Length: 210
Length: 382
Image 1 (cartoon, helix red, strand yellow):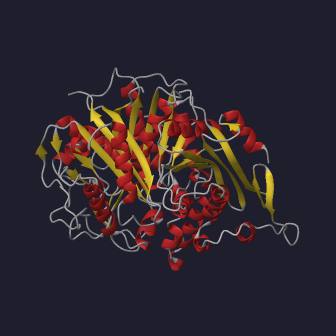
Image 2: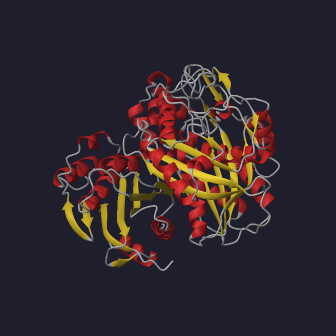
Image 3: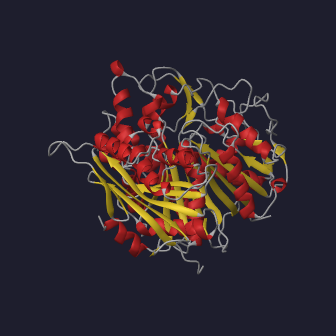
């Protein structure tokens, strides 16, 4: 019970900016005010971060957002090429509704009925966990929760339970939400190393920092 | 660590509106699957188990205003109400609520729907059910593809072990909608005939709609007669493909290994496996490989998809409840639709109802995104 866990690193992606541990590492400047759009921004961020992973371009918006935020943090972990035991505990408000609306539009009218498996597979929020697991060889615990707002307490309790029961060595937790053109990612890595104590006050402080 | 139990339960399906009636139908070999030719749902004929909206409304009228709740909400509330009534515990701050679903009220996105599109947000579904019963805590909605229902049991256990809750109610449900049918059809995964899990002539999945609810509790008193203790549980990703299972059954193999380790039992101590068995060629083959790698090829196994179809976010919870009742009856029930082995590795599929003393069972599920979940449960009342 007394075992303590820490937040090692954290990442925000919002407002056309990718930040690690509170410092902006990439900021996309739109060509003109009001032209900010997610797909251009995330592509530019992907290039800047030298992600080099061709499957990225097949992903839906939520997966792109989650994948890139996770990649920024996991890149610096010097992971094993074969397997890693890092659990993924993600949450959001809009589930996969951005892609759900696309699938719905493809079946709405009988005259233009054209459902696509490439779109349909992304109508589940946990697909982004699969994408991250494939890239980083994570044969680990996955769970995707839906809350109407960021819920630090539940993430903290769930991550603690996984770590204490040795279900995972580290847990990548957080919030990845994509709804219409609004997006926000905040992920943090919890384990036995780090400077920041893993408690709800600290998680909320980091979440609200940017 | 404190023990946790899966106790009072309810299934609402076209095989009955409570677990006992549903299990009685299964014991007689009755399936809820029917063939449909309804172009408002799918341009081609399909086979599914559907719960009659009229019957649901008729029941719901006794407890609420049908105009204010979607079909799924009515089904989930009716199901959960029976469990809350049976549990007879005050819904205070030590009681949690988990909702397990993949698509929730996705049908409100259809232009014909009389409900606002905002009802498609899963947190809205969570709030509606929370408010109906007056739960003190915010609902935890779990949406993790087809493992959601089994994973919800793990999640409940974990929140209880962290002392956040003493009791957690889980309600699960998904509908057979145009959205889901068109999607699975686009994958060419749907069978127009009743599904045949593990059979050599299997032709794909059927979808089904149910709501299923349970109480997960740390309290040993007032358990239901079919209650089980959660001995171990785990979820593992295949790290292989987002829409197809691993050829080696990696995630399923690992999740069962991890659950056995936590349960501190050997594979040969499991009396029965309630497997996923969707009747797609790849899924069933993957499971056969994983169970062989685990040395569990001789453990009696069935898939319940031949009775209910694939009920998505509810399936894992539904099938756990049915397994609990099988254990209580000490009967292994047949894997409906199966006659000749159609997977490359031998597995012991139950062909007819057989009496056997049952103590421990394993429930598994696998889903899109490469997720696999295993839970090991032991009967409380011997």
